[in-house]
Length: 106
Image (cartoon, rainbow, N blue to C red; front, side):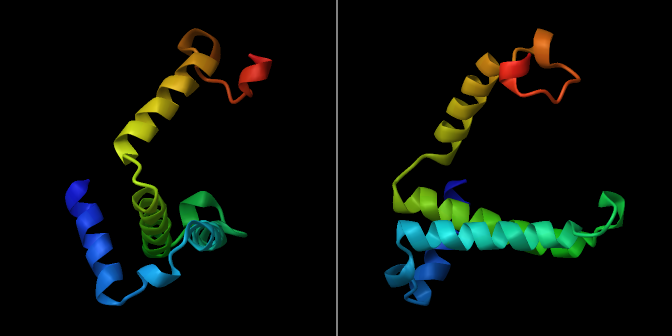
């Protein structure tokens, strides 16, 4: 993960793009890239999606998410693990297994 962040940071620094990468604009870019990922699935069966397009857009989503984490000095592993723990409390296996219900409906 650290090596990946180093590569993303270097790519940005080489182009002097950090000046444009404030939290708000990174969040907007992330949202736009997520929409482009959604577009890859639009009007198709999930099995018919072009996987190269999914990979390309998903990489953009990851890049912006990692840049946001870097901007705020967040440990990606730590925040993901904390969220998984929180979700495990909201969605206990014995109640949620095989269901798509929201935690308030379990």
